[in-house]
Length: 135
Image (cartoon, rainbow, N blue to C red):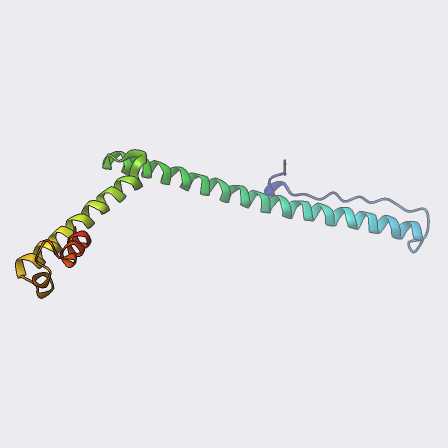
C-alpha cells in the first residue's frame, strides 16, 4: 500500500460559490460531502502513519531474528554439535547420570552401608535389586 510520507500531508481547500441560499438542502449535502472527504483523508493519513510504524517494527524484529539465528549458528559451530545440539546434551546428561549412579553404588559398597551388608550376597534378590537400581 502506497502512502504519502507524513511530511507531505496537505489538504485541498475548495471554495465553490453557491447559486442558492447557504441554508439550502443542496448546499448542506455539498458541505457534508466535503467534510466527509476531509475526514476520510485524515483517517487515511493516520492509518498510513500507523502502517509505517508497524513496518518499522516488523523490520526491527526481522533483524533481531537474523542476529539470533547467526549467533545460534556460531555457538553450535563452536560446540561441534551442529544440528544435533539437543541430542548431544541428552547424551551428555545420560552419561553424567550413569556416572553418578556408579559412584553412588561404589560409595555404598565402600562404606559397607547396612542396607548393602544385609543384601551383600549375590544370590539374594535384594542384592540384584540394588545392582539394577544403582548401575
